[in-house]
Image (cartoon, rainbow, N blue to C red; front, side, top):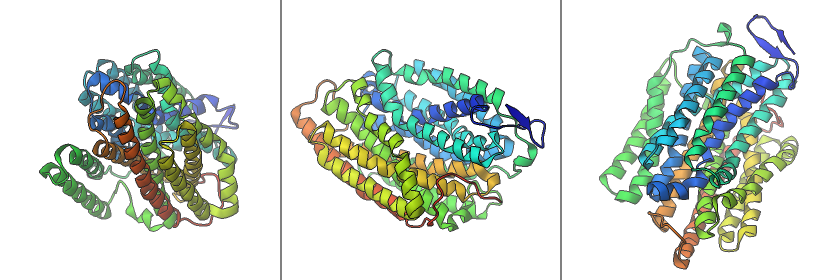
Length: 487
């Protein structure tokens, strides 16, 4: 059942059940854009064999999506706040579904990387908007607080479920269909949003100019930095191309900061980072995503190459991650209520690092030993990610919910891009650049284990340190639900 508010075009709902059509549609949209982060990870060995890809090219099959997703999300949030969140989401869903069908025509890794980058752009136009539109469905604050965690849970489940769904599907269809199936899902989501979500009211939009130079500079900074790692493996760390990428990335980042401080309508108002909550939550989210993506990337190769498991078995091997993410929700809430945001996140960062250190030990001790590390690590991940999402959204003005959600998701996607690039580069450097087909020799498996051990230890120090540093700047708030601040 619905009722009208001040504007006859604005529909709100009196219960989660009454809002099942738009809420399901928004959850579907958020799920498909998040599952696409990891859906192809389980298929990387198959893609490598079919398209003759190298370790670094497979790294970019995953990284290209995260790069454009993370690099353009803030711009997309600004576009949505200006032209209408519902309108931009509907356009993004159409483009996402249509481009996904292009996977059926891909014949090389270069084409696949380009397609993935285009899908990341479309996802950037969807992710922050699906989150912010949840607030429009309800007038009641309690319903908003119940609906938003549901959205976040669906998105996080999609991220972790990607390898499981992909592995199961690969038993029956080609990897191309893992992307093509996005089309009907996007269509269903489009219909639900079109029917159940009201159009934007002019008073809820901003007339700020779009910051296109800021968008370009942010993508260049992230993209060149990530490509510098690939170039270092392929051409040498002191080669002209590698050094040019490093310098270009630093120059783009510096120019971005200078531009955002001077422009009248910045894509990202850097003054928000003067708030410790915003700054710390953003930094910590980068660290968690570096860890999660790096582990998923490494374990996909571990299970399928080192163990020789089928894609479906390798996908099912990730189920402990999903179970931990779902089961640890009560534990996270208890920690936050008793310890506050800052201490709970520090505990989470410690568990994250401890889980990664254990996994470095477990790589040669069988699957059950790896599961122990998964559980410990993902309890920490769940604690940091959800607490930081609550803290970050709660620190943003109510009329910039798209931008607040975009900042949270951007931090995670930047971490995803960097984590994939880092782990792919380390494995290519320490183990092998061109993945051999067929069963691996005992020597190559041992070399992979040695390289994987280094990867997990580096992630423990890097991701754990980043998450702990970000957590240290949070407040002692005990809130467990996202509540945007009033302007």
